[in-house]
Image 1 (spheres, rainbow, N blue to C red):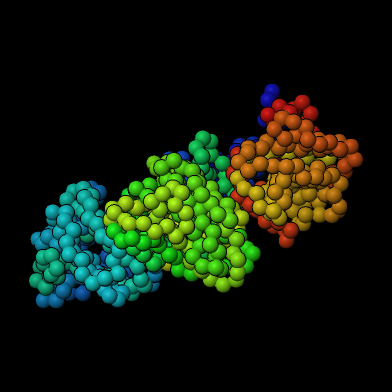
Image 2: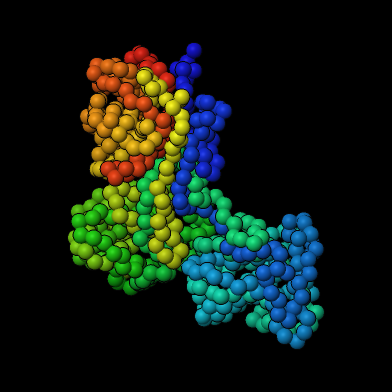
Length: 586
């Protein structure tokens, strides 16, 4: 018999669905944990790529005779599509006007519109956005050629073969358009006014970001997929076995995390969609220096900070001939800086700050720099090109017009450590805390004796914040048993009627270390083991009645969850022997 056979609850968080983390034991659903998070989020998936929420913000994405309207045109269903279906539509000019199909919009920010199209008896289509200065982009949908771009506000446009003579045509823009229009084109730069001119269209999509996402069908509402609200994040950061990512609420202070032209670009150019990002799609920027003798840099818009508070800056970057320096650009942010060697993956220099670098594969690094605000007010963060790995702050040199870096996923958050990437497309965004809990399971929790076990990686330490496996009476923390981290150290505690009857005290912990921690308890018989070693015992503790288990987030005013990675949690209804505790925690 293995120790697992003695367990009343085993949580190995790889089996999940929206709002649920399944228990391996029991397999009846009795031990399944409720998971909540009131916002979307990101994770690193099994392929090692950053995975986001995906959405199609259009309505009736392939029903062009519903919320769509036509002007000087008719729309006919049942046409042969790019996917072998009969789901395409014929858009045909019916009079001497400009034929088009239209959907009204109420969106804003950096977004990409896409539609599959094929030439009919004319070869051209145009996409138009009703937002000043009204960009038009023309597409040759018979020969797969991107045509003229007219107007402005378009960041990028593409035409890509999709099969069966169709092309996926995209336009990426920034703004708040009131309409998207699909026009029949007569030629490059000219719209059709001839009755009978027609093209085929299918599967329209509008999503946030710099590239078109895989198509999502919609009807009367927008549809969201991926790491949406209440979807547990089974995270593969660092490779190997996955863990359940549990993080605090954090606010991304920058309005643009991927659109670098939204900031002040100085003595260089920032070009969208030049290389595959850590997301696995072609949406990373290339920041290239000019030939001037100067500093080559990007300044963000000003962010508000409070004197004495810590802020963590992070940026995904890849070498393209230059090194990266991140620095504060005002006295409010302070003159701190850190320089990152994007060839070797090391921090070369840092000044009055705390810098680190994480390898994300394929030459990409997440460069992280924590600073402390020296005043209350607002200031900018600077991305600086550096021709030397030890070049330091405000580096000035003569550029060659070709070298630079690739960049993606810029983030600034208040706190003492970096958390998972929070995308923004025009406004600051908050990711809500992850909460994993289960009530009404007194029969699975040992009431007079038991053992609780947690296997986790200490990803971060932040004084005053907690990460725990906590069993309580369900209404307060007056009666509880917990193991985990508190105030930056490991700790185990039993509380009865708001009084601590057992407290291991703080046990020093190291960031980046995996801990297997177990506490066995019975009246006047408590033992605590960590990584195979007995850390503490007690012969004077009484045991409270408990009914609820919470992992990660303690919800009273004394503590908040911190970023940790949970590998496994186990409850036993009996006090394991000390030998069994040693075996369990090795």
